Image 1 (tube, helix red, strand yellow):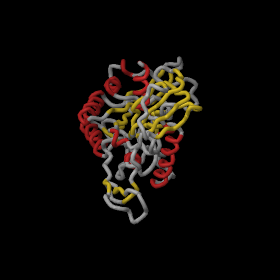
Image 2 (cartoon, rainbow, N blue to C red):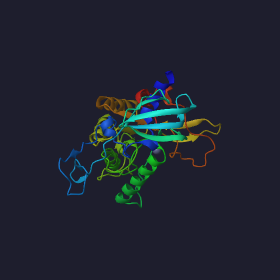
Image 3 (spheres, rainbow, N blue to C red):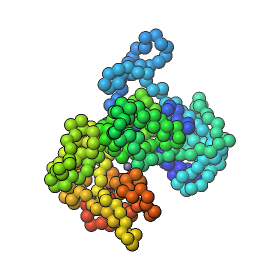
Image 4 (spheres, rainbow, N blue to C red):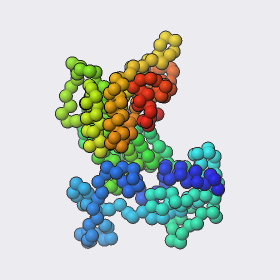
Length: 330
Ligand SMILES: [Zn+2]
């Protein structure tokens, strides 16, 4: 059936929250985060503790390998089709490992012998939710780096357990590349969380000459400040070298409304800098993420009108370059 293929694609992308055969996202094997180093499986018993398979982290240290994914079939009494916006009934979702292998009306999906069957015939099954603009790390302040890491670990688990199977993180909020570490730990099955794509520190425009209040960042925690094309290219390379999945940019700022209600904002990067960022990102095979929304970034917390502007695709400026091949947090 036609919808079957579309729905399969949607579920395959989103995953199914409550029926994942293993609680880890394990995205490295699915190709979502190739930067995560692979663990090494130790071919020996683990100190007599039973049938636990030991793995060695890429950085050393032994832990229990994530369980091998198994085939699972879910009988869904109701299944939300997020593509067509309809609620289907009496569906079967077949999962092989980390992927949706098939989905369709009960009786039309072949369930292989030995497959674990989860009966949700009295329940409603949703595709996994995606948060496309997430900050699971708390901005540095009174919280220490260790505290921020531990809080983020809980947030990631909470996100998965509340239905979010994919998160796009839009900078670590002054926590350097700890988001990369957390992504890798999820991928390796060390901690529990959704599929995560991280952007590290982000890149901001600092003007053509450093401002008097521009502070050095020897610990490499805050956004990288660039002042010219060369620095822009180097910043993209630096981010990629540190394992980010995408590049977070801030092409506009200073949001406000005119007295007549017109949205006003300022562009940041000069066009040649924006093009250099884009060019370097494309050369290295990563996407740009351009902050064009307002959520959490408004200078007018008591605003009465939404600040989300139209996508700046029509602008003959730096932002149009960003829009040409970027994915947007919303
Ligand atoms: Zn944000």
